[in-house]
Length: 238
Image (cartoon, rainbow, N blue to C red; front, side):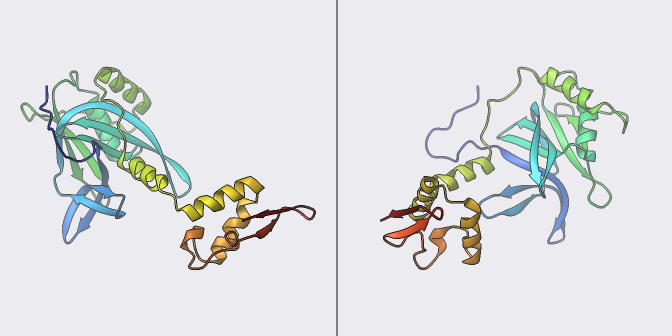
């Protein structure tokens, strides 16, 4: 049983490693962490992650108004790590082919990200105990869905508890604190069933995203302002 550290610490959020080859200040990296608060990439210099593969997850993420299917490789080590890559990438395919050769996932593995030509990244697996490479034949026409199900079946019972992502936690913190002015506008809009598109158009005209960003009170805040719902009805509030 792992030792439990008492006292102050950081929230138990997983560490996401996004597979992508790049270069910062002349140093090449093959994956990175993302700081959602500063909206910046944090390159990870280490190319190998050692731990217990506990789960494979398929996650749909929206990018440029399109749904993209991602493969999440959950690894238990000093932290919970999630290696995320596109399901169609060479990294995902080389990982799946190698992982399909593993008989016992109760032993730790070394997941290594290997840079290829241009932006290509491949995956190589090793047994952590003896550093032996897990070899497999390349098959671009493999049944990827079948391989994923096969590996998931071997991992059954190894899954970690559901964890909260840093992105979700940050969104929840952001939505938890609402400016009173914005809340008031939302309540009034809902009460009078005022069209959302007209509110958004007015905000864009004011070059703001929410009413509280305006320097002066808006027409929705002035005392005893009448909001016309239709040609025959008017709602007045204080």
